[in-house]
Length: 190
Image (cartoon, rainbow, N blue to C red; front, side):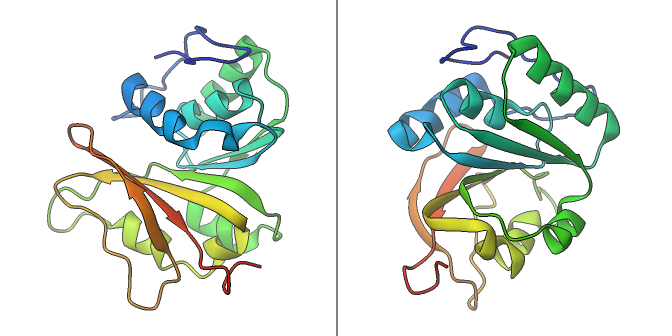
């Protein structure tokens, strides 16, 4: 894995051993092609950060800040090492489970929120997509006109809970990976 472009383009990204499914370079490249100029000057939140590849790519492309939320301590160490190796400023690593971090963080809007939770591939697996899409805290963290990009297992898809405010604006399938881009209706954005 590597940072694709920007000030740190080409720099390899270390992946923690605990990360079972890092986002492939081609998927990130496609996602950032869709995002275009939205990244420059953006405040970014990278949930289930793993190696930090989404937030690192954003900082390399001109984002002003990125918060990496990851529960696994070894992954947090690797994210910090990746930030240092790439000489990227504006990154902060929050070592905490995503659900508890969302409940205690002060409302600071983010222009882009990425989430790459563990896939629910079989019965009994936790459906993180439903939990995130149904979270009352997450919409409060998205800036007006911001985007929430949620990766999931393509065969399972994503189902937005009936009472959730999210509107899907784009989705693409890359093998088993399905990134979906969500926005909030203007009446809900705060």
